[in-house]
Every structure is written in structure tokens, then in C-alpha cells.
Length: 270
View 1 (cartoon, rainbow, N blue to C red):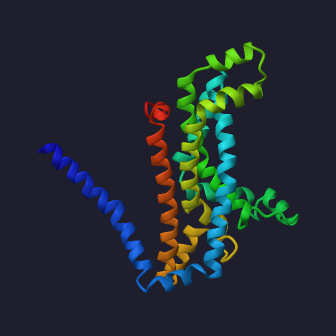
View 2 (tube, rainbow, N blue to C red; view 1 turned 120 degrees about the vertical axis):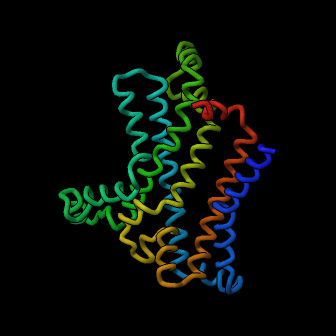
View 3 (spheres, rainbow, N blue to C red; view 1 turned 180 degrees about the vertical axis):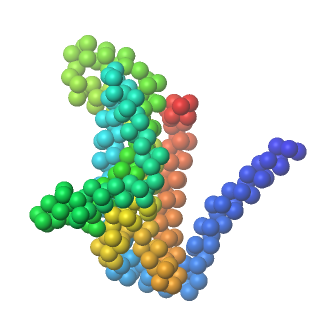
């Protein structure tokens, strides 16, 4: 009896916290019919926001994948004094508010800073421009790939790489033929999480983007702007698109967990 009550309570909370808001968003998006929803997505501002969000994710996620692999490789395959400090740096975005991270980028690259003034003078602005959005997104999403790979690579140890090197394989050959195949599913899992976070990031991007309509407005920022302008259908339709992208990522993540549960088990033990 107690077990059924507990399960029912959990399901009720999940329904209230997850499914009810999603249903409400879709209902509001379709309140004036499919035509109005589609027309709102066809507006130049909405198309620009969708395009910018996808481009930022397409840049930030692969770069974070490369950095995550390099960081995980350094931490798990080598012993050095600064290892604990490096792990702390990787976890830093988890403990720092995204708004604070965005503000730090503004202070570093803004027009009032020496570096920012020089970049602006040479027509290479960072803040209130596309590069600032990419940097903010990369900072916020940096830990996801590394944090998925580190437990897996610790679990696997160094024996296979050392054996390959002993047999005469070069460092790059060892990486591509031994290390990468062993971490491929954990890497994909981390990339999916990183992608979901990149598309939904608001705080840091809102600070560095300047919210220039049609130029530096990603989907989350555009949703806020439309809602504040009382364009409810357009705001909720764009929110629905963002939610569908998140659900697609969640579906891929769930399929990955189902198909390769044993290979991903190491990440659950840490």
C-alpha cells in the first residue's frame, strides 16, 4: 500500500511539474489555431531567433566536446599537481550563476574595458554580438561533456592505452583506435546534455547579447520579449518549438540509456 501511494505521489508531482506546463504552453500556442501559430513562426524575428539558437549550439557543442575530451583525457590518463584545480575549474560553471558569468564577460570584453575597447576599435566586438553569445553558451555548458567522460575513463583505467603504446602505436592512433571507441557512448550522452543546455540557456546570453532584435536574440530571449509585448501566441509557439527540441534531445538520451545501459553504468556510480 505504501509503495503504491509513494509511486502515485511521484507520478502526480511529475505531472504537475512537467507535463502540465508543457500542455499549457501547447494549448496557448494553438489558442488561435494552427494558422496563427505557423504565421508567428514565419515572422523574421522568430526565424532569426531559431537560426541563431541552432547556429550557437552547432558551434558551442562541438567545441565543448573537444575541450571535454581533452580535459577528461588529461585528468584520467596523467598525474600532475594541478589535477584537483582543473577539476574545480570544470565544475565552476555549475556553481556560478549564469547571470554572473555573463556579467564577467561584459566586464572583460565590454566597451569600457581595455581589451573590449581594442576589439571594438578593430571591428571585432564580443559583447552585444554573436561571439559573446557563443562564449557565454560555451562557459555555461562546458562541464557536461567532461563530467560524463571522467567517470567512464577512470573506470576503464589506462591498461589498454599503455598496451597500445607499448606495441608501437602513436598517441593519436591510440586515441582514435582505443580511447575514442571506449568512450563513444558516454561522449554522445554528454553531447546530448550539452546541446539541450545550450539551446535553453537564458541568463548568461541575456546579459551579453544586448537583446538586439533579429541579430542577437536566441529563442529563450525572443520568447521573453514576445511575452512582455503581450504577443502570447507568438511567445508560446516559439516556446513550444523550444520544448519540442528539448523533448527530442530527451528522447535520444533515453534511447541511448536503453540501448547502451551497461556501457553508461559507470557514470551512474560516480
